[in-house]
Image (cartoon, rainbow, N blue to C red; front, side, top):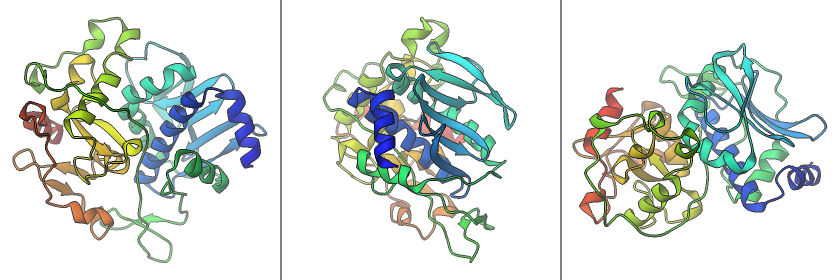
Length: 326
């Protein structure tokens, strides 16, 4: 399995950096699906090794194949790059879109929340033929150096507090997610304070093909610099697992403001996106969903965010308050 998968990826994603980007996004989707329910997803190869596919419920939500990458997401406005593949009856509001590998990483960042909405829709219809292949996850763990990337746990149900509970009553810990980041400066000229009430959708005012790319790498670099290369929650300094998280969703370049961002470890970012953790806008202390009580994340409950030394880079309390209200 590992050899055939490696051979397929050599053909479909010959550029090593692109391969790492695409597989990091796949790992992110696995963690998001696992956060919804450890029993709702499966990962494997199909068409005799000609594609790698992630299923959530019965639905393929992320497919890598020789012609590109297919992603399922729930969005009213289609992205500027790629092309429509179709829709799925299990997620009628969502669309399948095919991207070239060179466009995918930036598109995935922009569509992350729309992708999560599609996962939530398909997870509710989680009956499927469980064709999970653990060797594919094992390959990703080794290639991405993410040893905690989960396998699904079948036979689980939801307990009264929304925890995932196995058939024998044991708690099933759902972990979370993804990727890489570079390093550098820039935050000293932070510009005007971020005002979440003044956001206009930049996609209406600029060429859509530029919107998907513009500012993403600068946003990451600004957060890495602002937070000293450490997760704002855990203090983790391993750059490969640190991610740029938006407080309010991406709507164009205006939302790529350092005050609308947090530098978070991949799993913490996933929990933030899933609404399992949030931050009190007055105290900036981490708040925890009851489903995470008794897990390793309980140690962070009530802990204030690690703030940048530059006050102009502190997260916007207005944005944190608006996120909780929506």
